[in-house]
Amino acid sequence: MLDKISQTKTQLETELNSISSLIDLDNFRIKFLTRKGIIAELFEELKSISIEIKPHIGKVLNELRTFAQNEFEKKNLEFESVKNKSQKIDLTIPGKKNWTGTKHPLTQTLGEVKRIFSQMGFQIAQGPEIEDDYHNFEALNFPPNHPARDMQDTFFISEKILLRTHTSPVQIRIMEKQSPPIRVIIPGRVYRNEAISSRSYCLFHQVEGLYVDEKVSFSELKGTLVAFVKQFYGSNLKYKFRPSFFPFTEPSAEMDISCFLCNGKGCRVCKFSGWLEILGCGMVHPNIFKNINVDTEKYSGYAFGMGIERIAMLLYGVDDIRLFYENDVRFLKQF
Ligand code: DAH
Image (cartoon, rainbow, N blue to C red; front, side, top):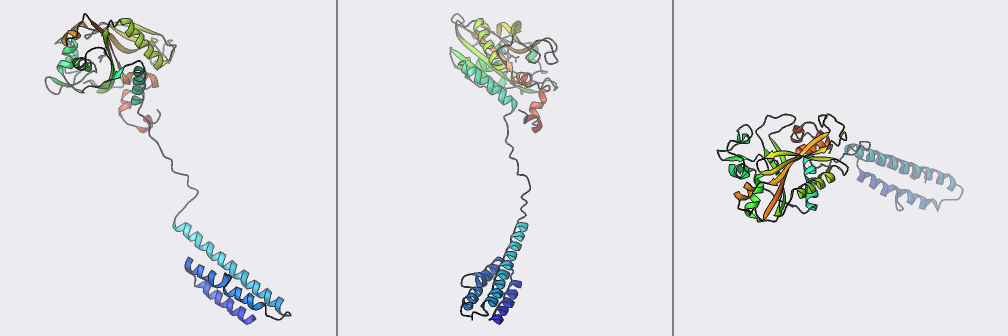
């Protein structure tokens, strides 16, 4: 019996040395370590061994089983670590961060403007960016020699075709198609042939407003714009309307709000005046209505226009308009 045990040990050691795969290792386990394996068979034989030598042989056999089990575990661990190395899993590496994009600050600002005016019953309309002289200037009551028609300010495509310099021509396009009541805001891109600087860019965005109906008054215009600025900038801000001039409105005004950065005390952003100009507005000029055959006895209207970049710059404290167009992620991800 002792011979058999030592032969088994020799066999087991040879086979251990020739294990080169997980399959070999499993075969080894089946051959020696299972209930029908060689070692179990030896334990079966032990039962019929005479009682005097049984304890001694039993001890040697137990040592063989422990040896076989330990060797099996060792080999198994070796295979595991080789597997981990070959897959190059480094569990200490921090996970990859998934960056999600954010909405562009201009889109966010425009979204908020749209939301507020939609709540007040304004619909959203659009018009072409490539315009003709008639809609961009003539129908809006710009005299033929008005400086805005100058090549300095306008990108002309041909003598009568240009990139729109404001969203006001869409007022005309809407009134040509639709009769009052009209209550729309018109967001969109506009273009100006200006020297690029921190304050002006060759393109920017405006939101135009137009309300035409019977008996529309200047106080309604004021009420609507005051409601807008209070929702947009905060309810305890101060405001004022200053007389101004636009060819397509009469009377015309510009709206200023108290600087929300310094509360009107005076700072760099408001140029130490305590006030910020935020939009132009007025009552639709009768000449406009005449140009498109709207009955001026029956209808009146108001219009307003504001620059999205300007209000976004004020809102977020951005001091260079070019940042909106450079697509620098370090800038954009702050919003
Ligand atoms: N179109 C003007 C501009 O680009 C802004 C403006 C002023 C629009 C007064 C209006 C308005 O509708 O009533 O400077």
